[in-house]
Image 1 (tube, each protein chain N blue to C red):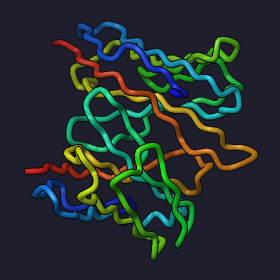
Image 2 (cartoon, rainbow over the protein chains, first blue to last red; image 1 turned 90 degrees about the vertical axis):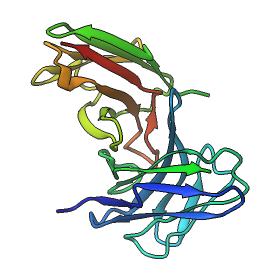
Image 3 (cartoon, rainbow over the protein chains, first blue to last red; image 1 turned 120 degrees about the vertical axis):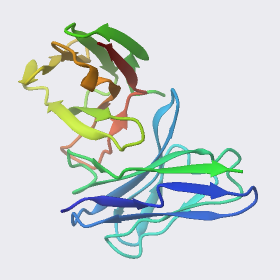
Image 4 (cartoon, rainbow over the protein chains, first blue to last red; image 1 turned 90 degrees about the horizontal axis):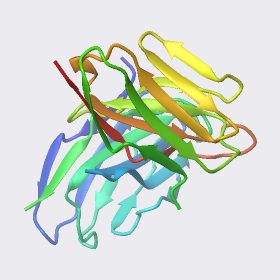
Amino acid sequence: DGGITQSPKYLFRKEGQNVTLSCEQNLNHDAMYWYRQDPGQGLRLIYYSQIVNDFQKGDIAEGYSVSREKKESFPLTVTSAQKNPTAFYLCASTLRVENTEAFFGQGTRLTVV
Amino acid sequence: QQQVKQSPQSLIVQKGGISIINCAYENTAFDYFPWYQQFPGKGPALLIAIRPDVSEKKEGRFTISFNKSAKQFSLHIMDSQPGDSATYFCAASKTQGGSEKLVFGKGTKLTVNP
């Protein structure tokens, strides 16, 4: 089945540590996205990538980094510079940036302990 | 600048009632308006979508009404069921003439009481 796989589902991080969230898609989509979801805040865009080896900052990129070395993979690193990293993180993809349906992964819940 | 404003933030409806969620947008270049449904602990999934060349689209109990002049669109859930309890997001994007990513509303948490 085609889709987006995020791992892990739950992640705990100590303060001051970097942590990487995985996102893999087998939909052959060009564009991939990372969103952060907090209660009452909706979906806030962190980074997106239109094509391999290219990515753009979203609305809340500070404290995050990404890479897009393969079409299928778009990992997100939450760095120690992110002051409030506890949140639900969602990865998504579209055929192209301007295309219609976005497919989402099941999310990773990150908790700083 | 919030490009898509969604209301209400939360909604409680009795089983069998009609749930109505509203969204307003600012960018007149938007030409695609989807609604996403998200259950707790899951990722959102596309529920229904409309383009501005029609004023209404219906799929089962779900209907989108679109008012281009007012720059507003709404989701109506007829005969609401407890299984419809979820968070609903409206969104908008420009799909023609250049790259524009989806812009989401802040979401509406719908609770349907049995």
